[in-house]
Length: 181
Image 1: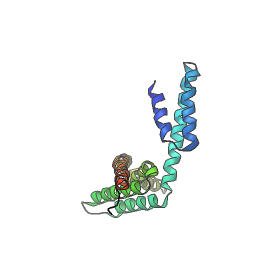
Image 2 (image 1 turned 90 degrees about the vertical axis):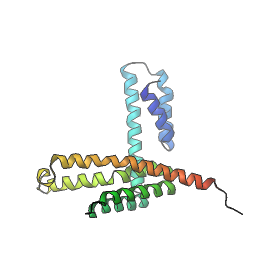
Image 3 (image 1 turned 45 degrees about the horizontal axis):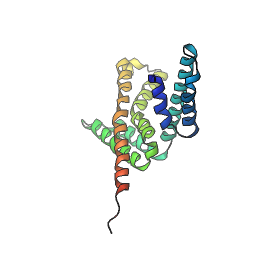
Image 4 (image 1 turned 90 degrees about the horizontal axis):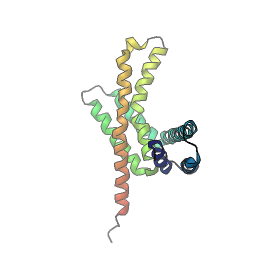
């Protein structure tokens, strides 16, 4: 089994509804697709489907009011903070918010964490490109290092994912306990 096939099989289990069924069908029918260019096209089409559906999942999760609130708080704290510990406060808000989102909505924990974790980076990039569109140019605002610094903020997706998964685990652990009589 190729790496692409394994990735499709793994993804099919995580995609909701008919999209997951479609990917499972793609993998099941792969054995009858001839080797070579046609098979590579078949796999590429399956990967494109997975990427498109994952993007839709993140967009749906990002549109949920709770994810919007957490994202807005994180971006707001990042924009307002002027002290030396502002980045730590922003990270703490990101971690707590994503853990709460994971506990509140386990099925949407991962897409919500991706949306919230990337909110600061997207906000920074939007500010840079808005300044460039208004004629201020990127160089006077922040230069190319500013763009790279903003892109580097996508690393916040990793702690957001970890916090969301911890929130899901905490919910499952609490749900497993029976109330004392």
